[in-house]
Amino acid sequence: MTPPIANDSTTGGHVGLYGLPTSSVTSRPITAVALIALSTLLSMSAWFSATFVVPQLKDDWGLGAGGTSALTIAVQLGFVVGALVSAATGVVDAIPTRTLISVGGLGAGLCNAGLLICDGLASALPLRVATGMFLAAVYPPAVKEVSTWFLRGRGKALSVMIGALTLGSALPHLVRATGGGVDWRLVIGTTSVLAIAGGLVVLLIRGSGPYPFPRRPFSLGGGLRSIRNRDVALANVGYVGHMWELYAMWAFVGSFIVALPAVASRSDAESFGALLAFICIGVGAAGCLLGGVMGDRWGRPRAALISLVCSGGSALLLAGTYTTAPLGLVLGVCAFWGFWVIADSAQFSAMVAESADPDYVGGAISLQLALGYITTMVTLAVIPQLVDHFSWRTALMVLAVGPAVGAVAMVVADRARSARA
Image 1 (cartoon, helix red, strand yellow):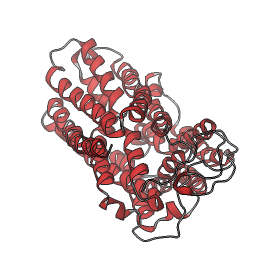
Image 2 (cartoon, helix red, strand yellow):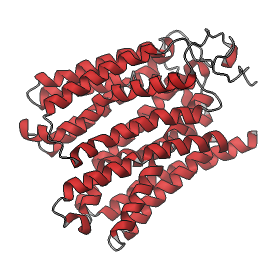
Image 3 (cartoon, helix red, strand yellow):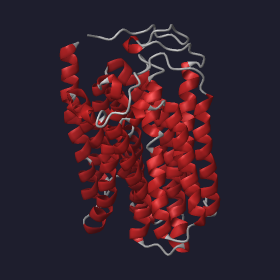
Image 4 (cartoon, helix red, strand yellow):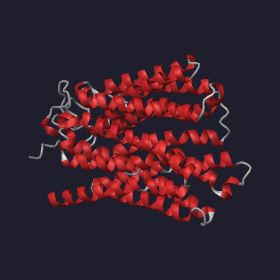
């Protein structure tokens, strides 16, 4: 039976989704989502800081290739562990989301600041893992919190938050393109303060969203059981396919561009390549917004399918043409790829929020994100090896496998949605 739905107004009544009573909404939904997006972006700066400082730490701490990779992957490992613990214990559904986001931002900022007293990889790695674990208390609850403020426009609302994170991911490339000669200690100190500020910003939201999810006591495995839901399982398969490609594209598109003969021959190849990488990643913020519009209008599986086909197709097109096509065309395809590679991200989260058991939505979202970030750890390790031992063509073709698998899952999900309509 379809749960009762409150009027989709900005100040609306006292009965929300699932017939739950809500407190009088005092923050406007747009304001609330903007504050959640800002809080998440500021908190996640502790994650982005690794991209800024790793080149300098290679010299100061004498890190080799393995050490720099470990420093980057440690945050993702911590995030995966934190998200799995959250899904397994039900903490994200038992504790108010804004409380979790606040604690997560404060904890991530303090752990990030701990790098200032480290003198090498051995002392830094535990702090990076802990940073990722605290950030697992930011991102999944933020997705859940946004979902309580919008119903019919939920896809666009989630896209705003993820679009902000996309710009945050692109920012290190812009800094590198403009010289980026900032001491790593200043970067760590600044991002630590920003993460702490992110933990405080979310507390500025007044009242509750008009579409709250039920709060339940701690439940072992509540979020993990969401995988039994067919719609959630399909959303997770699509998300894994999406993440197979996403972070590898973001991490290595700059290296790919610099490796192009027409760019490699330039005296400013590194800074020029970093600027182009910023554009190719940053344009994804606009892709997020379009993906949100498509998801709200045509259905989330169909919107995700379009994005997966476009991004995976871009990888295959680059694999077949990057050695012979004019530079302008190759760069245009890279930007097109960056636009679509993130456009579907919010739709997978929205599919889980709308399909999972409402008692354990937070745990279900945490599980989805954990599966996705486990996948990124694989491709971040594998793609450089494929480039070194084979070619960029091989690496690009392997990246396209993820969107292909995700697209199949979205076709099945879209047919199931059409059958129910």
